[in-house]
Length: 102
Image (cartoon, rainbow, N blue to C red; front, top):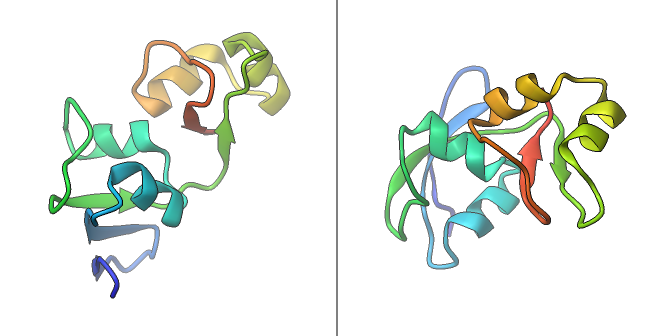
């Protein structure tokens, strides 16, 4: 059974209901950056099981590794630090965080 409720015309944004596996699994399943989805929906925390939210498929995702810094990630992708932080609606990065590269 799918939790996909509605697909927008551009196929990048869609509405889903958070399944029993939780928010992070929905993000993985739909290739979405969790911090971007939380910001897109105007939330302060992860949505709970059963919540209906707008998802946005990411173009490029990156999982921050323990040895990486904000500077090294930005240098690798050729983006500005402020741009990456603002795009993901975050203040810093931490190991194993999933971020979308603008």
